[in-house]
Image 1 (tube, rainbow, N blue to C red):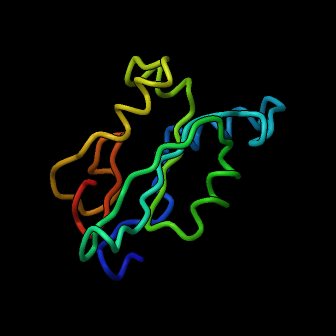
Image 2 (cartoon, rainbow, N blue to C red):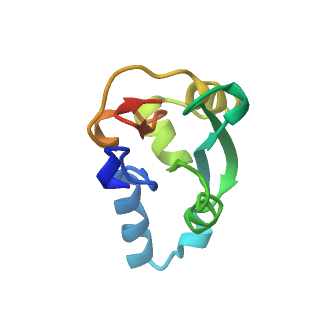
Image 3 (cartoon, rainbow, N blue to C red):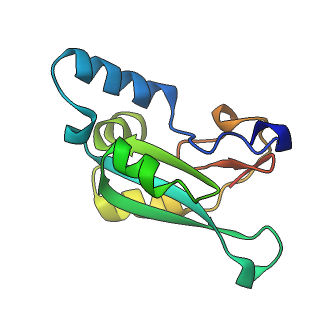
Length: 124
């Protein structure tokens, strides 16, 4: 997808992936760490290049990768990361925050906020 300047399909933040690596060194498996996933799915009924963000709770990173296979983009965030970086613990607040509209342009996923995905050079 890098040829279209759409960003990577898996836009999970490097800090979150580092947390998984540290947990693995301490004996945890990726299947034991839960989080929330943000998926971008096409909405052809809404117009050309229209997408919808879908928030799904209680997923592991491997589950997120599997479910994100046919999505435009996805991101997984641990609940610990959301509490530490955004001060969010309530699932309703997490869903509301991640589902919010985003603005700004991006060259890759690092240019967008945690609750946003970089798609077609726009934070979505």
